Length: 262
Image (cartoon, rainbow, N blue to C red; front, side, top):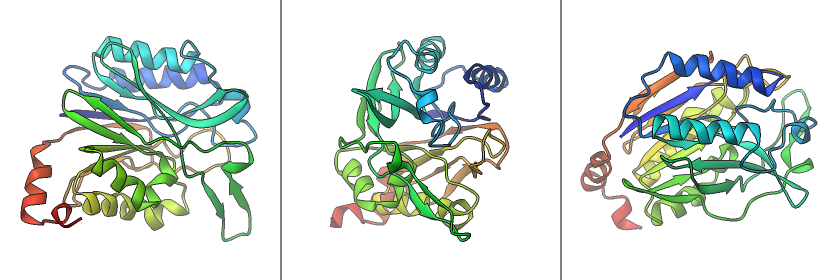
C-alpha cells in the first residue's frame, strides 16, 4: 500500500498554500498512489484567533474542492489533514477523507481538544473556539478498515484501541505538535500507539516555517506494527513516500501476541 505524506508550509493566504502544495506534488510520483495525507490545519495558521477566518462551510469551499479534485486526479484516497469546519455556527477541527473518485467517505471531528501551559506560563486552548467531536474515526477501503485521529487524540490510548477493535489496519493522524511537545513526545506517542495496537501509524504535520506564532514541529512519519519508524521527515517543507505491507500486522501479532490477550 503506497502512502504519500505532504508536509507543506502554511501561508497567510490559502491560495498561496495551495500553490505551494502543488509545487510539492509536482516533485512526487503520483502514479499508483493509495493514500495522500496532509497535516492538521494544513491550510490554516494555527492561531485560534484566526480560525473563524479560515472556516470551510461546505464541500465546495476552496480547500475541500482542492482535496476532492486531487483525489479524482490521482485516483487515490485523500486524508485531507484538517480544516476549520463550520456546522450550525459551531467550529470543529475536522478531517475529510475522500475516496478515489472524489466522494467524502468520512468526516472526523477531533475529540480531544489541545490545551497546554508552556514553561514560560503562556497558555493555549482550542476549547476557547472549537467544539469537540464525538464519533469514532473509522472508514472502509478495499484494503479493509482504516482509522483516523487528530493530533492531541493520540495521547489517549483508548481512542486508538477502539479503532483497532473496530478493525483498523492503519491509523492516520493529521497533527501539529510544536517545538516544545514535539521533541518530548512526538515519536514516543506514535511508537506507543503502534506497539499497543500492532498496526501502522501515519503522522502528517505542516512544516516548521508555517505562518504565525505557533512553532510547528514537522517530522511527519510512518511507524510499523512493531514500533519501527519506517520514514521520518525533518522540519522543512517536503514529502514522504512509503510503501507498507499490511501483512506485517499479522506477522507482528503472531510473534508477539498482544492483541490476542485483550
